[in-house]
Every structure is written in C-alpha cells, then in structure tokens.
Length: 283
Image (cartoon, rainbow, N blue to C red; front, side):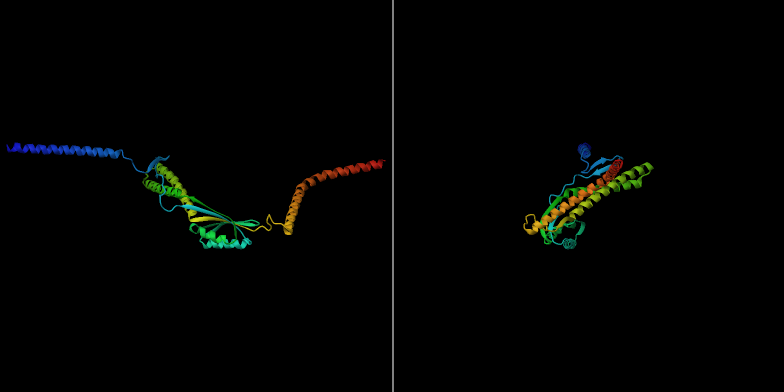
C-alpha cells in the first residue's frame, strides 16, 4: 500500500517535467525561426564583378542640429588711384589674417586678385579691404556642403574597412588565381578610396578657407557726363586717336595687295610706253 501511494505523485512529477521540456523546446524553436527571418544589418551588401562582397553604408543623414559645413566666397570691386600700392596692401592684409594670394591678373588699368582667407575672418577682411578705396561692387555667396561631406566620410570609412579585409584575404590566399583576383579587386578599391579622400580634403579645404576676389580699378579721367573745355579736348583726342588707328589698320590691310598688284601694273605700263615709242619712230 505504501508503494502504491508513492507511485502516484512520482508519475505526476515526471509528467509535469515532460510537459515543461516540450514547451521549452517549442519556445526555442520559435525563437530560432524568428532570428532566421530577422533583418541582417543596416549596412547593405552588393557583389562586385570579381565575386567579392562590398559593404555599402546607409544614406548619410546630416544632423538636425550642429555646425553646418559651408563654402563661402566673396567679390569686391574697389576704385583706387594707385593700383600697385593698394594691391600690395591687399596682399599684406590677407596674409595678416592667415590667408594667401592664390592668383593675380593685371591689365592696363585694373588688377584682379584672388585670395584664400580663413572663413571665420572673412567679414573682417572684407571690412578692412573696403576701406582702401571707393567700393563699386560687393557680393557674397555661400554653399552648404554638409551632406556631401558626411556622405563622403561615411564612404571613406566603409572603403577602408573593405580594403583591410581584402588585405587579410591576400595573406591567406593559397593559389595564384586567388592572389591575382584579390590583388585586382584590392587595387580597384584602393583607387576609389584615394579618390574619396581627395574629394573630402578638397571640400574641407574650401570650407576652412574662403575665396575673396578683389578687382582694383583706376577712376576714369573724364566721366561720361562731364562737360567743358577739358571734356571736349579729351573727347576730340580720343576720336582722333581712334580715326588714326582705323586708317593705319586699313593701310596695313591693303598694303600686301598693293605690292602684289604693283608688279603686273608696272609691266603693263612699261609695255604700253614701249609700243607708243615704236609707233612714233615709224611716223
């Protein structure tokens, strides 16, 4: 009787244990299935022509808040009496602000200078340069390149990781075909990485250093609305100079034709004169 009394509880405990194990196995199976169908990762994978997987970073989003990456450019026209002296002063003040002269083009009565100055000191430099003469024109432009820089830097990080993985594969390559294939793909990705790094460096340089174009011009000797003796004198002299230049140009254009036509004309004149002389001797 005592054994029969103990057999019932033991059977119940075993049954409960079996039911718990089945339910746990079903739960693990469901979890494994859910993990199997879960999305892989935020990064996307594509396959190149040589069969290597290439990771592509997700579209870079610029932060909602934070400093924007902006390229600033400015143009300034100044009328001065002494272009050489003011040009040297423009160069000195630009270098004093931490910039440098990038290009200078000098014409008969004007000089155009292109400087690169730190972007945070652009307004200060423009204010100083505006005091060197009479400002005739002034303009500023900005270009936001935040998204371009964020995207380029993200692609650089992905490309560097890809290059490192290919170098690791190169160390483990066992056959000549594997080495050639990996080396070709590695060269292609290193070239793309260099191009991305150069692009990022160029954009960063344009953001850090603003471009300022200054055009220095001499004031006109006689304004268009001036009147009086001096205005008439200068106007007449300009008209005479223009007419003289036109006549000299026309003479230079006709002279080659005149030289070529002079030879047959002279020969015809001599032949006619000789015939006339023979006719007179016969008479």
